[in-house]
Length: 119
Image (cartoon, rainbow, N blue to C red; front, side, top):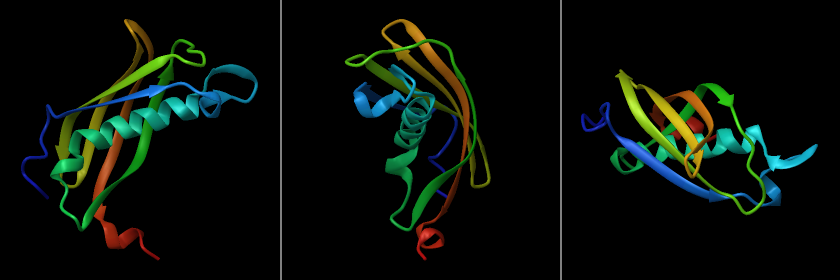
């Protein structure tokens, strides 16, 4: 694995909440969409350091969805790599709407060969 993949790397992704991101029972940003944003931010932190034969897979997410956001809200996911153990990566993630924290998570991913997912 690339030795440049080390704690301290940061990834950030912005998303404008649209109908596809809403919970089925209320017109607010859904928890699955929040987790998706967090995974995208974590991937953004290390994407450029993976070689073409590698990818990452998420294997654990401990998420807290703390506040709502409606359609049109601009949500930012910011993920910081906090630990590398072999091919396993641990991230701390925060999703915000301006200064309002919408959610937090510990997200774990593993670097794997791309070929392991092709079948």
